Image (cartoon, rainbow, N blue to C red; front, side, top):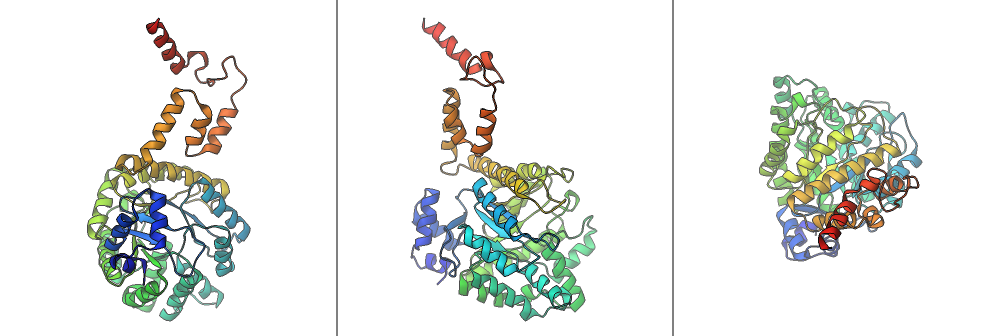
Length: 431
């Protein structure tokens, strides 16, 4: 029995109780949201050491950090360290997107040292295996693709990105659209190439029931990937993106009917004025399923600072109803991120998620900001540091203040501190 089936039968699982406790809500309420498909809980049956995590309606906005090797950078130790850094910075999940080296071994090593949910994109490993066999990805048989997905599920991966909506209909819509940047999703592009070469439909779309059987057996969450997500603002909310989204809504209904948990992935590069409408459209077309967004990035020209562009879009998306933010690092579009990039990206997305939670009234969000405000009023620097989303950087900045006449203030205002001035004014009034 899967988590969604248990919830529909009225049984509250241990995983649901643990996740509800983290959220500060009742387990019965969370179970009802899972039963409706409005929330999911990461709980692959093959992984026992993972901390249960709920994503979806009424819950705090979660943040994912992507890590993984490339064929040019095969340092498994670095990826393990990046995973640790991401979690220390506040990431709730990690996705291993490795494309080079011993991919199963890399996943196993990462899962050995982290206890948060893990996600993957199995098509990357399918592609790597094809190269290892001295053939192209397009020469892979359908069985070979599904074998990789099942292996990831058996290894205990909690959710997998599968580009089921990249079908011939959506590809035709893109051709007629005249996109500026075509397809920027690696999984989406590989799928399009496979379809063109084989003159056949996407196997993950054509054999979706087979995918559901695998997911149900292992209680694997299907994260329905947005292969036609816009890679630049000019391509946002076009026919190919929406054609794919309509298909994802249909597939999400089939998944939920089959007792399989599902997440919908979203854009991408989206101008600020279209972010809210993209979220509302997804929630409507996909029956309220949890929405997982990359950024979204609200400008194309922030290279080196894309974590900021993504945080701006992420905050607005979270307020509008997005449930899960995939971080963007300063290295986006430029290189494989290092530990510093990972930390900067996670913190930016954590800030965006928290800002969204404040706006939509998530339980516990306002209490943290009120604690910070109270600490600032009393010039309680230690509590301010502990209340910050990045205590490490806050402490470093505080301790960098040079010796001064009034150690209770900072070097920005010193003797002209506004808080001290108001305190003096109150004393004058009292006297």
